[in-house]
Image (tube, rainbow, N blue to C red; front, side, top):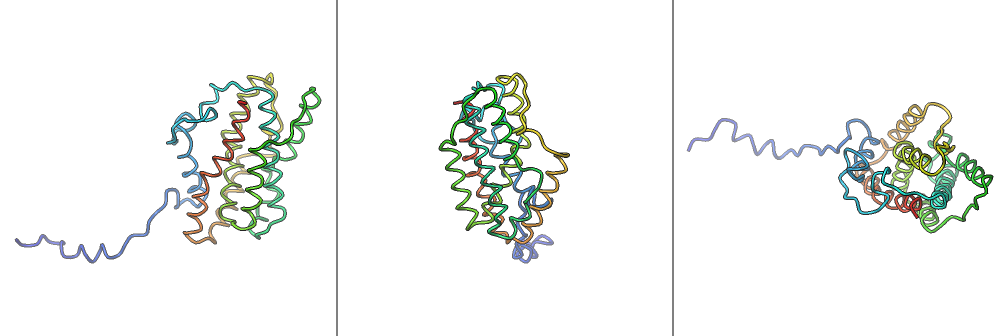
Length: 237
């Protein structure tokens, strides 16, 4: 049978493998991180979510039944994590960490004010519990030896708080705090601009990474969600 025109050239074109494109890659590395993170949400949490609801904190926040004691445990453990992140960035074991000092996204001081407010209302402030202590220790160890994995946690903790975290804060305040807005959910300046500035810094840092290092960073997303989810679950305890 005669060959169809063009059939002979097929082997020549397939020999050159096209470069694999990663979802979001054309917009910069932050978009790649966002894409991976969104897939780890449940459908109830985000339109792009693909995860099945397994844990109580993965249900939509309107179905939560929070307690003040649980919320206090969540705030205390969150403060330990932010103290740790901000200390790591300050110390800058790797020069790239110094890019993320004084971004305006810092939460430690805000949380200190909130815990002071709870104290004034007569609540006893608990010590940090296992989820916060474990995550803090993990971040310290990781930051000393694995900058790509550490940056994954940095991105997910701060950016998740500025999005879903704010919605959780609002709903919990409605249910148990008489709509009191905590400092944890307030930023000095325009939040969208602060986030954009950090996005640009993250993209700039990742430009110096190989594709393998970028993939290694993306693979850490699941661990970041696991630790944050354990701290979030304290609200419902």
